[in-house]
Length: 217
Ligand SMILES: C[S@@+](CC[C@H](N)C(=O)[O-])C[C@H]1O[C@@H](n2cnc3c(N)ncnc32)[C@H](O)[C@@H]1O
Image (cartoon, rainbow, N blue to C red; front, side, top):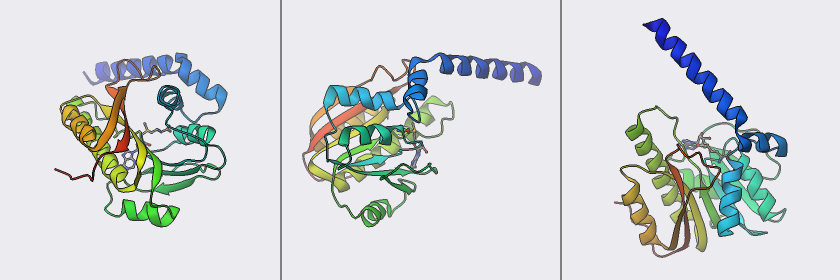
């Protein structure tokens, strides 16, 4: 019984590695020096929604290993201001402020303001994912909780004319969350970039211009 399960796991692992290596975005990321294939999701969001401009300030929540940060620098140029936050350690990127912290920590907003010296950002991005358990409902719930926290942080630190982009897993809490985004932003779009795997429940919300002060419920 144990041996059968073990062999199945090894076979599934091999299949995942094969698919991963064959993946075009994975290959392109290696070739172009991006830290992960996730870079192409942001490039595709940028192409469609033009969220980044030269010189803007960007807060990237859940930024490790850092491929979105690399893409952000490409579009905001040397005069852009970039801050990244992640619970995991991350190898340094030149001229980017990295804060290793849990976004659920009570003092996260204070920490970002104190370390970066900035109270308002033009763009807040969130590509947060929990460590996946394989239990669909639990994973969806954990991911939406990260997206909720990102929204709270965006409401506190985003400029009124700013842009908020967040990854979302489409599950039970999805509708309630999107309702809240629509209540607090004037323009809201949903987009699944081609680089996002078809079998993944993820989609991105792109929200522009804050409507009113956030009240959590
Ligand atoms: C899909 S990865 C982000 C990839 C990133 N956008 C990139 O391009 O390199 C999701 C990240 O969420 C981070 N994360 C999960 N829970 C977190 C939390 N509570 N606080 C901060 N970061 C968290 C993970 O450590 C992981 O690095």
